[in-house]
Image 1 (spheres, one colour):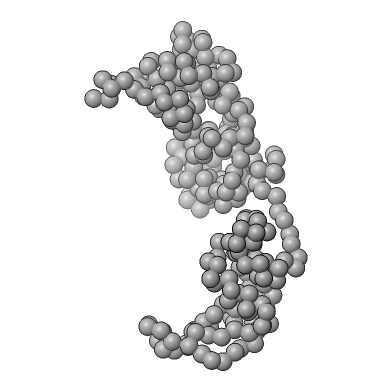
Image 2 (cartoon, rainbow, N blue to C red):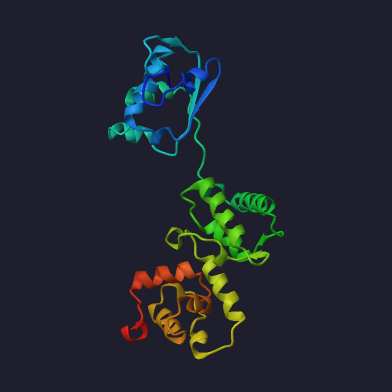
Length: 259
């Protein structure tokens, strides 16, 4: 809302607030559902009175602004729970545009991910990178609860840590518990097994039930001396996926190996 000079400590000059600065134009309120409840009352007052008053001033300044707000929260539910002001909700709800979450875009996720991948490649001056077939399937199988923001940041990390041009599933850091499919796990496992010498344990790992087979997971850990990274590679899983299953089933190394 701005302030007048001397209104508080360090207020050495008068400052125009955002609502006043947007007079005659548009004020965009991003993540409106995250704004503190006490501050939303001021927003509601601006919309209701079409005026603003700077801190330390008695003068009401008229403003003519259009307000656009965005949120990924269920504001109607928040109103019912008392976590969002009902008066502000109904003043903002003139025209509502709903956008589908990233996971609902289907095959377009791969194209969107490729766009951000190349964007980060150019920004950091990396060599041209591309997704493997298994990585593309991972992008489709993951639920992306953080939508575009999560995808963009995940791929930025991927580009920064990339050591090869081919981006595989183990280079995309996601939470395996939020996977919506299993195809990528099977494909990744098959690809890994094709490049490893056949052993009795690997022969037993040819079934599609590997992901939830505690016995095979334990045998892989024992075979690699309880090395998580090596076990994950042996099974064709990412390290995060392997650690998730270790914690899920409580598969921890014997005490004598931990000394």
